[in-house]
Length: 98
Image (cartoon, rainbow, N blue to C red; front, side):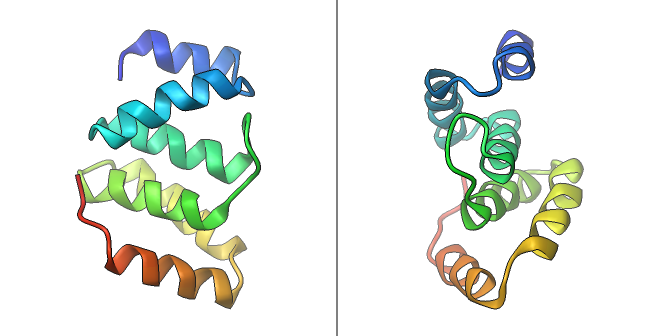
């Protein structure tokens, strides 16, 4: 993910069109986009907050070596209820990491 896209996330963080651009990059395996998408889901930037999705995208970024993703994932985990944690674990077990 290029620095221009990261800058736009900061400036236009609630733009649903930007969310889709970041999602495409994250699905293609871009580690920065995976972190950004986790942040977007955690904070509800341009979409409804979704802690399970945030946890999953941050887990992908962490698996690829983004240590900051681990810190944010821990914060997200502290906000999740037991049902959300169970759902994240269920979904994570079926994911092929990219």
